[in-house]
Length: 402
Ligand SMILES: Nc1ncnc2c1ncn2[C@@H]1O[C@H](COP(=O)(O)OP(=O)(O)OP(=O)(O)O)[C@@H](O)[C@H]1O
Ligand SMILES: [Mg+2]
Image (cartoon, rainbow, N blue to C red; front, side, top):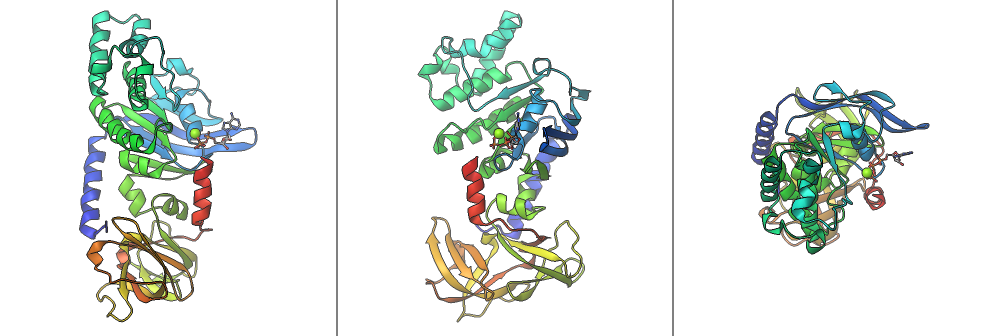
């Protein structure tokens, strides 16, 4: 489970290669878009582009403005300020049916009295497209979504996942410039959702159409996306590849919303050398990797270390040597989680420390109350601008609301 340096680099390179493969002109440009409902700012100055063929996700807690942004791209809402361009043309005032995008909602409505084939063919047939062309395209898409053998069935004779794939095929049949998906897997059970995540990604690669995917589920976004926009209260906090966002979150919010993170507040005291700074956290002065935001000496800072980057050694053993930093801690709780043991500890200043310890660490049996050394490589840490740190309960509340 531990993300070693070499592993992270390989993943970075992979992400980079994929990003290059997806390079094309922008399909969608969100140009300084703000959306207000009365006085309420639902989306604040969103400004980004989405490239041809990209799988782009908008991720964030309930009410952060994901659906509103998607609805502006689709044309169901108009921006209060700014412009939206689709393949270079300003569509801010173009009605939804005149935009070459399609939307798949969580509650997709298939025609119950029509077969799978007729559901998928409905759009192009109503547009009076050539019969043979339509048939060929529908067959192709039914292959892609693996429903060729179900073409003559009615929706009621299909499972939830199969119905969702019919909805997808129907939305893709007209070659839209982009497919917009708003929590399309929300109604499916967890296991099927996992299967569909890989299916969606495969289908997107096969058809090569830009997907813009809205979700509040970080795992879903990490699994499928080329890039993710993390939103919080109407603001886009960061846009990046899954690796970038996980490894170098821009803010404490992003660090805590994506994956699990130790976040300790303190102060940045100064520079250690060209590449590293020093921070006072957990009652110690520690060498740490600086983030993108410049923090003045003495300024508030939060140190982030992912639980899988932390090494735990019993206090009676020698602590690890070399380029590592760490503190003494007391074990407070242990939970077996399958691939890792989740170890909760308390630092000398009683800040909580969480480590995910895999079998490769060969840790002897520990009990609450045991003394340990907790250490990590300075390169595995990240200094973020100080902020009110959301607690685990805060985050769970956010997720419950959505
Ligand atoms: N038509 C509207 N009138 C007034 N307020 C609205 C309207 N539509 C959305 N809002 C508000 O704008 C904010 C953003 O809503 P939006 O639907 O974009 O959130 P979301 O990120 O999609 O959340 P969820 O994950 O719950 O779907 C919310 O506070 C919502 O109440
Ligand atoms: Mg929504």
